[in-house]
Image 1 (cartoon, rainbow, N blue to C red):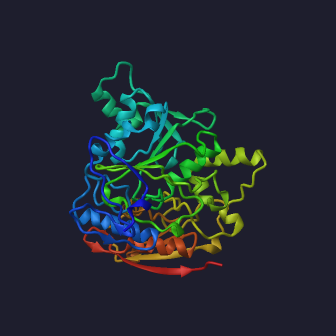
Image 2: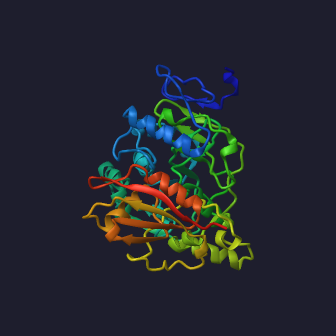
Image 3: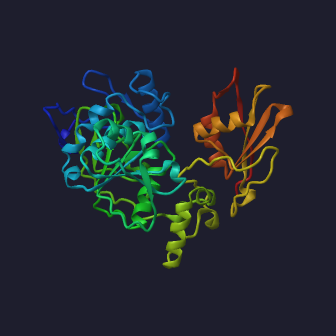
Length: 398
């Protein structure tokens, strides 16, 4: 193998750099390598399965459909302040996931401005973390937790004129070339695109991801799309990799990939669209162009009422509906329990029809692709003592 083709690797504190493993899932020198899949979801599943089977993650478990809270995350974070990009940065945006908790603490300890995206972008884009005056290290650590983000922060709007000097994102998988795969919901990509659109970042703003060594894999460039965010640095517990990535980052929001339901759920996205519309930009949405590719795939909270009431979402073409039938519901099951399970799996439909006498529910999705993805996520789901039966139902894509 020609290691000269690998990305530049930087070592700190005498850490031994591991050899580049092209086309294989890198685990460690002493462990065997596992061949990865050829789709984004295939790569995700192999990473998640491997981390679960080898007990490489802390709470929350299982790691499936999450940014894994990998063991060694705090040790990996210790390399972060050694980056030149960190030392010169004043304002740093860090994702709110558990494995980046120590990263957030280090930003606060260094007296830099910490921005954390609001969960699922429901109430805005950023929260600026504001520790109390004279905060001790213990207080700063509390500020870096999810509860601290809620208790010690102020929201920043589109008119805040914030400039972000460094970005930290979570990943499920990443390659030494800088290609990144998230958990499949598209939030990191959307957050970056929104920051570009509001002038908070530019092409040269460095992007860092912090992962376990087993999450560094070979990813075919053919899997990347124009909205996918790449990374400039990868930090693991054992190494720091400068990817030298030259693939252009997203230059703003691609409105043709934004669905009406996404716009309904993310107020700041609606505001940004209005701003760009006034500026004369093309802000035609996915449903308006007839596109059926749901990307980013943002789970929606339940909007329909029990009994099959129509969804209040506007602009969604109802004849694009596709359904998934969920059967074998327990006699005592409540619709709220199913909704909660769908939310946790990232498979929330546009509308849910609860058929209690048949112990069944019908989930309505925008198109067959979304329905198929939901059916795949729901396979093997338990509610109470029952394993639910999941089947694709009515499909009316055009």
